[in-house]
Amino acid sequence: QLQASGGGLVQPGGSLRLSCVASGRVIGGGGIVGPNAMAWYRQAPGAQRELVASILVSGETYYVDSVKGRLTISRNSAENTIFLQMNSLKPEDTAVYYCNTLSQSANWGQGTLVTVSS
Image (cartoon, rainbow, N blue to C red; front, side, top):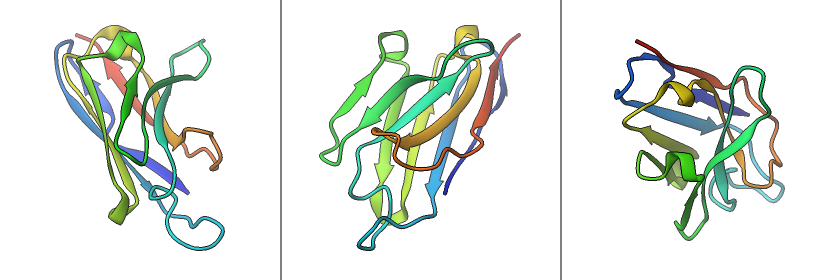
């Protein structure tokens, strides 16, 4: 239901733009993105999955301290898609990135791997 893409290998200081398309429907009709707070999560090797950024239906955003000022989350509810613009990437941003609702109510997709390395 949730397909993330846009990951890859990038040098420190580089940029990537991740996309996540939600293909399912919620009970009562409509797309997943429109009525839900959405979020990006990441899981580094050997670590637990963590919340990176979220965006409410209102557009209000939240970022974990380690990514503030470098990552930007946005949404296009009409296209059932959310985005994560990643700038000034650091090696510690290396992880598999996933999208889901903020309540983690959708099935997890496979994620997209981001590797930051010189």
